Image (cartoon, rainbow, N blue to C red):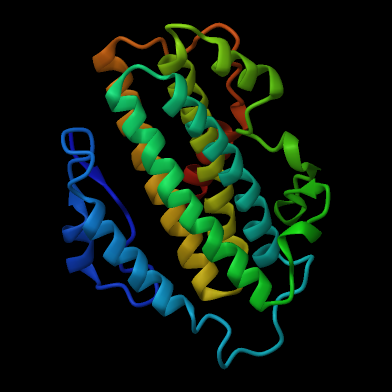
Length: 247
């Protein structure tokens, strides 16, 4: 099975179509083989991102889609990292643990990028409001965003003896579906070109990872609907609505 680590030409300083091809690599078969390529791409992204605010006018305000997306996706990423850390401790299937490692590595990197961008605009991560997704027209409490694992689901993941991998994959697929919906909305709503590119890249990457995790779960015979995990339909319906608008 192949996977696309989509740290590509959409990133500032990216290498165009050649970078896309260079990042096409097998993750499950060789979980370490793509690390150098991904690191180089990440460094290019980081170097190019230094110019995000150089030469721009007034920075986006706290109530803009640009800042709202950075804050909300940061919170979403934090939850994904917490889920992945539990999988690394309690999981049994090496293929599932590879996904967990990748989520921690790349989403932690993206959190750093989003934090630095928000700080450059004068917005500290700790100043985020309790409400999320208002910039999408769908305000909810930050910890109730679609895809965020509930306390009960996190407890299940910690205690699911022999079923940790299935719970992890089910939670992450649901988490990614909602993340894709948020990122696709941001790609349409934000004003900053670099934030738009980041949102589009997150949407592409997480869409690919959903397909990868689904395929691995089917190959390993993991239950994609384990008892205690309640999928959030918002992520699925939002993606369907987006696709319908594009056709």
